[in-house]
Length: 123
Length: 177
Image 1 (tube, one colour):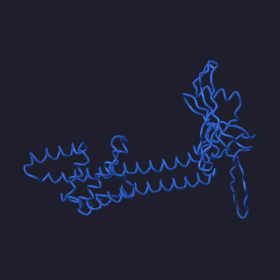
Image 2: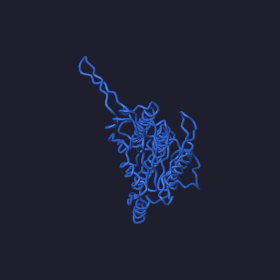
Image 3: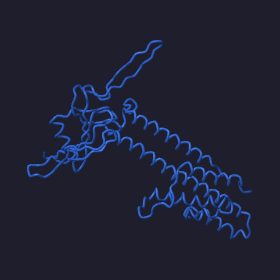
């Protein structure tokens, strides 16, 4: 368990997931970060001895941006997603926040991320 | 002696602080439209607010470093300009090498020694405060935890003190050639 403290929710305990080899050697942690996260519904970090990667929970469509486009007397409201390709609710890897890239987490991607954070290229 | 560069950097540092105010408001309001394309996305709100605050503190500290560098440069140039007076001094065989030696070596003088030269020209209390600012500037640059700064330095207060020194020297005017 790990204790998180957020201004909005105060302190609370939440499980921490250790990822170990068959020999019981820890290679990475799935460490909860918080619920009150900008542009997401929550975040856990995949932390290894080399790096960490943010994984966030996004609702269907993800956060939307609304822009009003004016032309003469008429105004048109355009809504577009902050992150591309967030078609279903679920856990996403924030590949590049500057470019608005989030990739849906699946087994293949999770293994790739684990290799990177824990330097496990034999996996 | 000009305080123009000090004024310009002060204005830039104030604008930087204003930009951070806007960033802080965007974070507090979770305005994803304003935050899109930045590293704030996906950050816990508390962490994002801390980033803004840490950045503001860093901007303040770096402003003090920059203000100090600008003052030091002005004081060195002021001293080097006064060395031109030695061109008319007798005996010239002594005065000229003295001028050349000071001009060549002043860059390596300790800042407190340079400041002491100005005690007779500006309020010694201002020089004393300038030395405290220098102490803070060194702490920012070196962050020695065993030697904390004797005084904190707030950028606007630092600007006012250093501006007052340069302003006073500016009133004294350039040397007669």
